[in-house]
Image 1 (cartoon, rainbow, N blue to C red):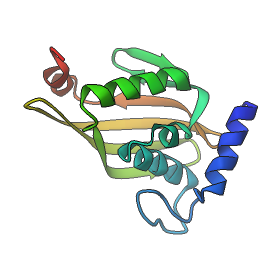
Image 2: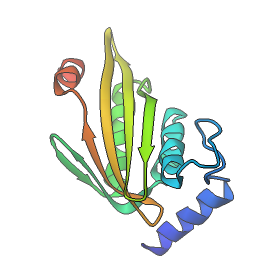
Image 3: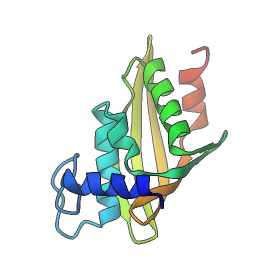
Image 4: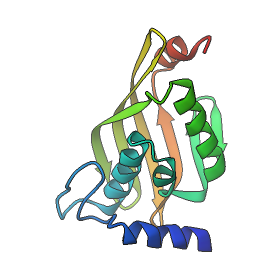
Length: 154
C-alpha cells in the first residue's frame, strides 16, 4: 500500500465509514467491514461522487471483465466517467445482495441506465478481492447480450 492509500483509509475513517453504518443505510454491528466498504463505494457511485467511489480502490486495482482488464485507479475513473457521460448520468446500481468474508465480497446487482429510448437493466455479479481495506481486484460478469443491445451505436 502507498502513502496515498493510507491517506484514503484515514479519510474513510474520518467520514465514519466503518462497520456501524453505510452510505446505503444502517447495517448491523455484525456486518463484515468488506461489505461496508463496497456498499459505501456503491452509495457514492449512485450519488455521482466518483471520488467517494474510488476511495475504496487500491491505487493499482484491476477490474477484470469479458473485454479485458482496466488497470489502476486512474483508468477506472476514466471508464466510470465515460460511462456516466454516455448515459447522461443515468447509470445507477441497485444492490440485490452482498456476501462478504475475509477473502472476497460478492455483489449481486441490477445495473440500470437510459440512453435515448434504450433502457439498460443488466443483472450483474461482481466478485471483489479486498486486501488491507482496499479493493485490489474486481471480476465482473453481466449479460453481454443486454450490454451489446444497450451500448451498440452509442
